Image (cartoon, rainbow, N blue to C red; front, top):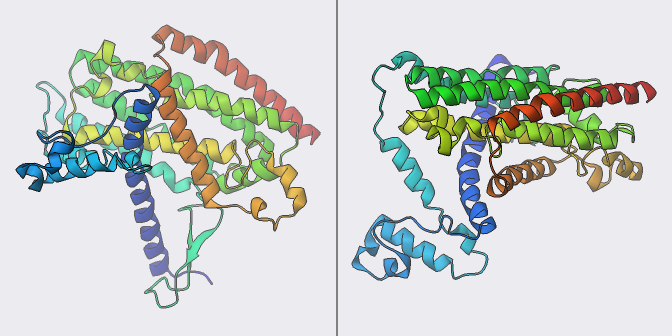
Length: 395
């Protein structure tokens, strides 16, 4: 039954709120995981407690333990003594970070272009969140509203906001707008270090967007579609067996470009602390800085979702087209059924890889960054596209 205009609007608002809530909740969890994982990898202290002038077990035994930070310190310290619960130590850091960002003084540098300086972070975060409207977390409905639910009772709640035929083009087009927020913010700061970071970021993102887009053309050619749902389904269940190594190589090229596109180690040249203080957002404080922070981590989630959808089997269990061999057992088998859990599991694994790489690899030099992009990745992706066209013609 077609929905009325009121039902369409209400359903869209519910989906938008849930989508934004999911991304906004995942970002702080990623930052917490980043601190913990890097601490484990590098064998050093990570997030363990929220300090308020109190340290260790003493926090729970002093008269100050009645304060918020004292009580949290004590709780976190004792959690560390319980197996499997020690991983939750440091969770109150979320509260401290949120309070810090909300209460920090909002400074606009003297001589800065105030209007552009304020608008730039908004451009980055809006483009980063808008692209999720074309990402399908599951191929169909997550659940159906009960009949008694007002306005949308009895209607299915889809795991995607839109299902447009040119979904990949929409994602690539909107996400590329984010670089304007970085460049304009750097230029409007009226400071040399942000300007250098902004110019680096512009050159880096433009350079690596070429091989990233070309690598995504491999599943486009193999599936003959630009729709997110269709591409995810066909790359998982319908590709020719000759395409399996092609998807495998394409995934690693895409992932390498994704690190550069999101300004992550080892390609974080736009934010190199040892060279540029902190890069293009050096002059930003408070919530304007947090917008850049949100945009970076939202882009990490996006590129992970694209990799999971188009290379790692999407909503199906096995990656790189191996699911086609399981489909012979019958589409009704549980391991041949698409699931949001498979998709989210792959996204979370790729987010872990981002953190893992940050804790492991050193930063490239800028000339090495450009050398890798233009002399290696672009030619390799052109070869992959040619081979993908041959396989599509053969199949």
